[in-house]
Amino acid sequence: MDAFTHFNGISGKVIFDNARVGVKEGFGLYAKPQAGYQALSAHYAFKTHFTNINSGNEKSLVENLVGWSRRNLMVPIPRVDSIDELNELLIAGCLEYRQHKIQGRSQTVGEQSIADCHALIKLPEYTFDTSRTVSPRVYDDSTFQFDRNRYSVPVKLVGRQISVKAFGNEIACYYNADKVATHQRSYERGEILYQLEHYLPLLEQKPRSVYHAKPIRRSEAMALLDWGRTFPNGAKDTVKLLVLSVEYGVNRLLTIRDQLPTGIQPTIELVRSELSPPVEPIPSLATEISVHPVDLKAYDRKFKVVGQ
Image 1 (cartoon, helix red, strand yellow):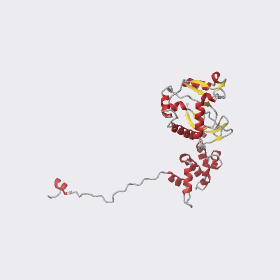
Image 2 (cartoon, rainbow, N blue to C red):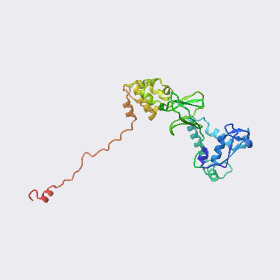
Image 3 (tube, rainbow, N blue to C red):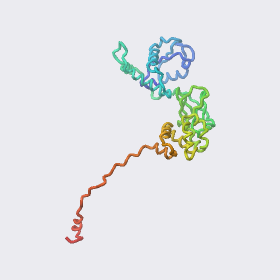
Image 4 (tube, helix red, strand yellow):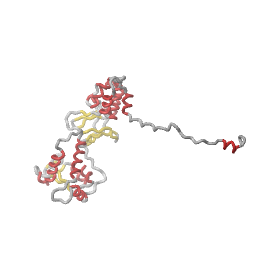
């Protein structure tokens, strides 16, 4: 589906591997697609074609391009923080490949791609929803269960039923049609994924729990706890530090901590002043302003206030 959007069109036939996620039973010409694949092909009006088992030769071009991508884009192994960042690197590498000219061809890969795009079917008005949708209830710890893992939502939703749309790499949570949380999807088992901002309203009401709360101890904001203990108001100031970390990032606050001179008492006001953009200097004004003398006696003569 992302490929259709990228090329701004749909091919008349799409070849799929004989994976169980797409094939209910059979293989090749006799494959019966899963309901989701049938709905996808109906929405975009393309014909599905499933390969036979262990028949890489039926999609040799794809196999060769996968090998090229592995050798050229995955060596050395990319160091990324998320699947989205990895996808951006791969797309950048593929776009760069458009400048390549295959031996024996007069056009570059990009020029041939533009020519092929003219034969694509126009995209429909609406994008097909590929998500798996469920409606779980939020537990007392402000998390919900999906698949084999749990994910957090804002604490105000405890006990409420929400709508969850699970995509391949993302979990999107909705309440009353409003998106309330987004998580990167986990394929582990028994993992709990917290987001600090979901628990801040509760911590502001009960600041003493800040040093023992699991959502904090499992986040990068854990590094701020020891520093927060040195502030005048202890737990309350620590919660305020966490609020600032959501807006400005933990690393920026840690940089401020490390740059403070030894012996300086840290305060929330001091941290906020370091986070504020520098004030632009006021343009200097001339110390002397030239004033042309005016003969005010002209008014006196006009109105005959004094003698001529």
